[in-house]
Amino acid sequence: MLKKHGKVLGTSFLALFLIIIVSFLLTATTQAIPLPSVTKNAQRYKLPNGLTVILKENHASRVCAIQVWVKTGSANETEKEAGVTHLIEHMIFKGTQKRKTGQIAREIEAAGGEINAYTSYDRTVYHVEIDSAHLDTGLDVLLDAVQHSTFDPVELAREKEVVLEEYRRGLDSPARQLAKAVMKLCYKKHPYGRPIIGYENTIRSIKRSDILSYIDRWYTPKNMFIIVVGDFHTTEVLEQIRALTQNFPHRRGATPNRPVEPPQSHYRQRILKQDVKQLYLDISWHIPSLSHPDTPALDVLEVILGQGKSSRLYRRLKAHQNLVHDIDASAWEMLDSGLFSIEATLRPDKLHRTI
Image (cartoon, rainbow, N blue to C red; front, side, top):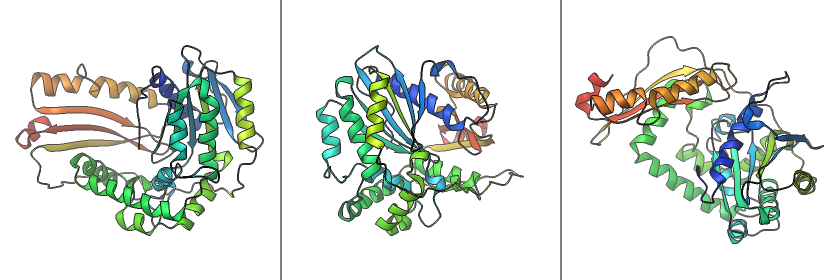
């Protein structure tokens, strides 16, 4: 699940800041790199257990955003455990040693906050937006969840059915089917070619022991960031986080060992035939990883070409020539080689003119 915008005034900016600052820090090397302006006044700490904490005070409103970034996503799975990262994201809020099923969400909502999470190919992120008066509650609940979830077998069986229903809904969505087909076509060896949600057979086969094995490998302090932005005092929050994580469960950890995608040597094409009234088109190119110096230029290109009604593609193919129903461009920048994609919906008889 991915929630892009908070309902509380001011949280959308805070979430955007968090994503920008952590994306930068995840790709930073030991070499000194000038911080972008968005990270000004952000303080970074390394706790004795290896946990990285990033804090930035912002007293513009009485709101705090908390995020826990785990540096693992579906690309760290084996073929057999495809979908386990996403299933864990669902299960993290289903109960801990001191909080029963449903209690995690109830505590946050009772304090007027929101709690959610999302899974990507490279990361899993758990986040809370809450009134600064209840920041203590937000930190306690979220850090309890990511450290001490019990993964109750009964809840696991229920949640697998929820995920399977999500998987089946995806089969009925032409846009989702297109996205999966594009990734599979573009990545023949790299695990980006597998869907984040996994496959029906792998979702069904995941056991509690598989989840615990994955947690043992990737949910370690050295592989996690805790970020807080908002109306608080740094020294107080740092001590709270230190106290809440000082007994972080011992886990062995692992080092990613992803296969390298071989260079593409020829044009690839795939056509999916479905009973739909419009055509869904995707044209994609391989691009460098997120840490490459061309990333800012690709971000600018994305906006110029296909973001909004003033973009080049929209003005020419939609506004002027009326060839497409909609069109946009996206730079999918990931830890390994990503994609630059142009996506459009259109009538089948306008395909050749559009291309």
